[in-house]
Length: 216
Image (cartoon, rainbow, N blue to C red; front, side, top):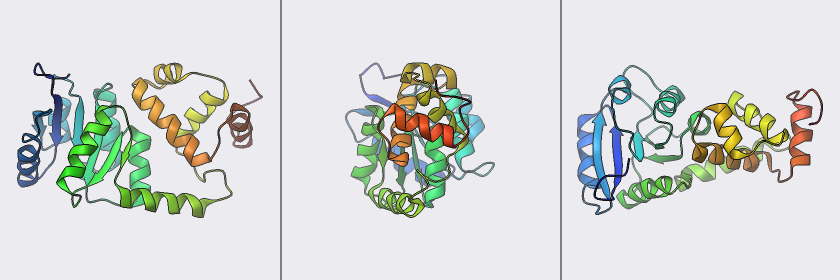
């Protein structure tokens, strides 16, 4: 829901009042961004009626943490972009957040201008990863090396299966009940993780992983 003024509408999900207030003050200085809601708990965020353009969410809340937060937000706000803003930097947590439906991942010690730019990027439908985290993820992928991307999450396996069967991004989005933007981002991440570019490669990979009974 872009605001009436044409600015990017943002909801903040952050358990610490001081951090939340600081973020709001930071974002409201930007001429193209407007904070339209805030919450300190996941249940409060889930009760918001308006669907914002971007949700900026912590990954650790009092009652819940990790990718479960992102998964709940994604199911409730299908069309919103989700930017994680946290101090959690473990590569497995970053990967899990993206697999659950995040569009971007930044850290709280990033420069203010980088956080603002991350919001603009995910709003445009682009994926954002804080540069230092991106380097760590790349090194992790390199270490996994020869196993065609290493372990895949359940969601990644389903995306792989659907791609191997020839489904379009729109069809994948409908089947997995996510937005088209999320489906496109998941496809891009999967292809990068596997290092594959053709459907033939995807079919072979899906067969090797037991995701297809026979080539489609």
